[in-house]
Image 1 (cartoon, rainbow, N blue to C red):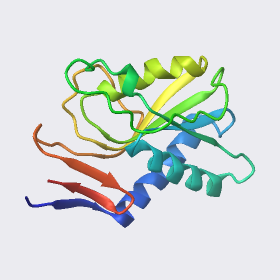
Image 2 (cartoon, rainbow, N blue to C red):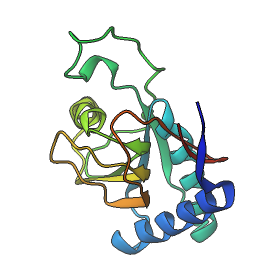
Image 3 (tube, rainbow, N blue to C red):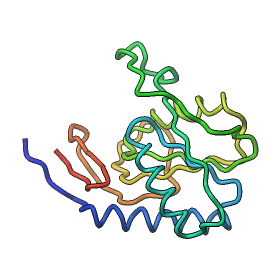
Image 4 (tube, one colour):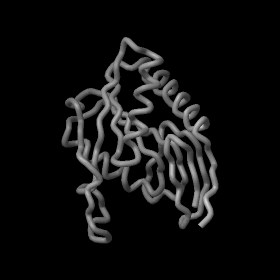
Length: 169
């Protein structure tokens, strides 16, 4: 199987920097902003964005959490439930602006599950979505607020997004 690189590590770093600046602009600063990475691929995105945001505004630290949506998926009967990892939400989300982060947005079903799972941790003022790659093929009406790269793909292709780059197989 051949792998084609579509974003290098430098491209991913630039995308994260752009997304971080867009988050600051859209929210008029970082007051009340919380990053929540979806297990597993979105956690590194949240951590990387947190570092960039700290560089933009060191006086306003941004809380970072992680969310495992395994038990909130709507395809439980179609495939086995395998918890990705532990959920770690560092605070109540009441009144915050949660920026959900993920590596690749595909059908939207993981994001739907994440929206349901967030309810257990409070009622955010707003929920935004940041992804490194939006590959299309949505099955639900979900659209990201922040995108590193729109990448049209075939349904049967595999897209991998890491800090080292984005590849298609």
